Image 1: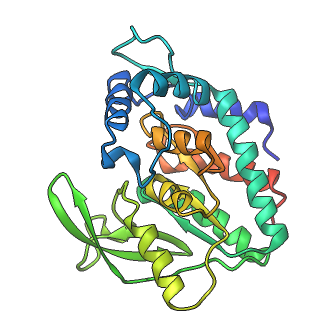
Image 2 (image 1 turned 135 degrees about the vertical axis):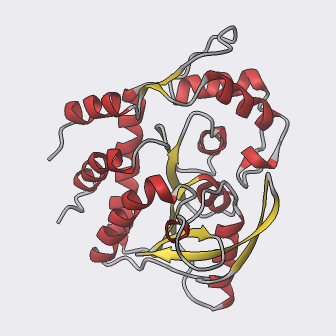
Length: 271
């Protein structure tokens, strides 16, 4: 079993917490866009609060451990590893509850190149515990607005974890999916599940629009979020998101393996 101390050391060594790669400029830009209700950073959330830039900075300092000093405008920023550990414990508790209730679960990621392995391991564990891991709307087209205009993607699943990929033959990274912040894939998946008369998820696990999009529709959602993704933490503060775990979501995929072991152990889902 991976101890809390060992995981804390790993978080710092891998850049998952402590001083992280997401810059202060990126963070402040995201907070500014969120305050302006830019859909690119709302991730499907419709916040009820005012959430100005100063409010968001205070929230993110509290939830993540970024600098709360408004005069800090450039350079590096940080995530408090203790907040990451508390988030992972709460995340594991929700997985344990889902396993105990054998509830249907939907997994989805907008970071397939980094986080797919993390979610696949959790999906395998919940499936082995008797949960139905849902895969609705496989192959469905989803039109997503990007900086290059509206692009059509296909909704697909890899071992029970949803992602979007560009149409066409595999290769050039397509087999691992595309990076996306959009809530449209989770909306498409939920709509397809409802139309088929099949079960709807009682828990959605993922990141970006998968979490905020599901939470906004009243489905319990938990996920991982970087310091430039304030939507998940606003959703947690307002009650639409059950758990938002602060960590850098862009490091090497292998760096998330110790987190997988820790979460599965804490949830009593290790095999």
